[in-house]
Image (cartoon, rainbow, N blue to C red; front, side, top):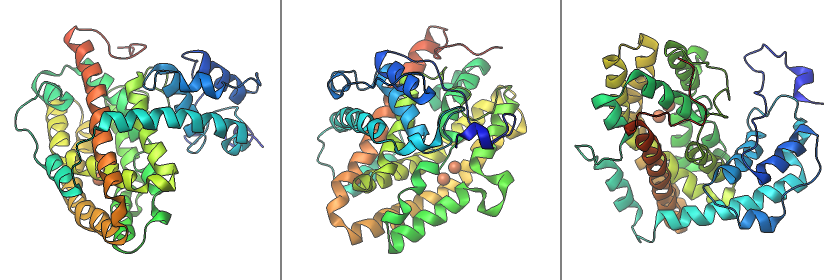
Length: 343
Ligand SMILES: [Fe+2]
Ligand SMILES: [Fe+2]
């Protein structure tokens, strides 16, 4: 049974269309998903590809998306197709190796890595998108930023749920407490993904799920692919927790700057609400994640310390790459997207 058979096309639950390919590897995979081709990339070709390039990142993104909402016209059974899972595994090896290299060999312990996240630089270090947007961001840059971030925020907190069955005790209770808030604490209108959709509408963007996949640069796909990678593999549960901690701990100051930026350009109340909400909620979440989730996991499985640090450092690494990409384009006055937004 395919998705199209069960979901009306105009329903908000309708899956997005498949995006266009970005190279030979993603081309073969997309053809397989569409049912128009049977050739899949050889593991060798995947291993030789650029880990952060458009082709490999899109390949990973579309294969991971089968575990979320899928795509229109794609057979739902392909989620567990052994040949596609084999291609994904080869791509994940390439990606994870690059993340390990990017995360560095700092040899930090968990407390040091978390402390560094909390030691927010007061000024702009030249890499920070939120500093730039607060200080001098223009409306078109905020719209591009929202379009890029929509890949994650429209499925906010979803990839982190996969870790729950792999935890116990304090780590599990803390994780679920934070996720409960992310999913609106029982109220659909307060689900963070919905708040982000409202922000997009306020900014004149199309808030449908997956709408900006085609426009998003590889650096933006990589950030979301990392969450899916860490979330889907039990062996990477420590990295998922480290990643989640990074998101929650760095969110309040970054969200404060983005709320200011939106106020400055005169965006509507829904646009501001998303970030205002995160300033408040994440101040609590960061404490729960640090003391209960990380603390509880380390108490249970002290051997995961290096993986928690990996999750923290890899997140910083990919966020730097994305920030550099966005700022380089904006400083030259050009779009950071693959296809510029319509005004
Ligand atoms: Fe959130
Ligand atoms: Fe949060």
